[in-house]
Length: 157
Image 1 (cartoon, one colour):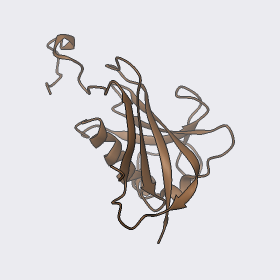
Image 2 (tube, one colour; image 1 turned 90 degrees about the horizontal axis):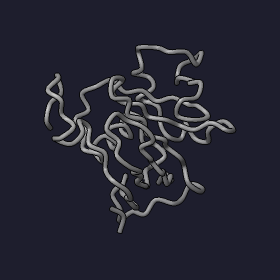
Image 3 (cartoon, one colour; image 1 turned 135 degrees about the vertical axis):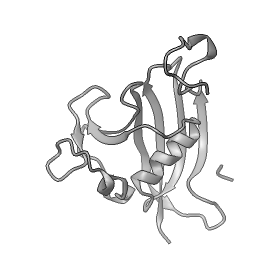
Image 4 (cartoon, rainbow, N blue to C red; image 1 turned 90 degrees about the vertical axis):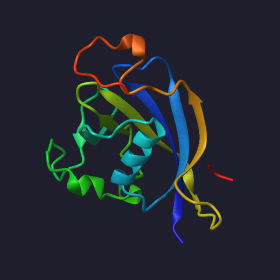
């Protein structure tokens, strides 16, 4: 039986971000970054039809270190999406993990591991939501934000 990480995921930027939004999940250490990306996008009800990447940095706009052999940008990120959380954490000192979605709208989520790895509970289906706070972002903004351009309308127990 594998362990569980508790992850705090905070939306720290995006074209239509109206206020703070954060949720916490418990996820198996063998969860892939691709699965984590899908879970984040599902949590915020985003379509998932734009480019997305993971990177390390000191802050959301800091110098980015990409998940590649040399730390530089690589447009073939299949290997990154197959990386397991156990290969990502612990992070290097002073670095944070970011998930960046939709290069035009610049949605940025900061992912922080909280505490130590815990034991998996057999009766719980992972990943599961521990908590959610704030105003959930809307991928394309509110109806009043729409300007007629090419935008479309759009648990642990």
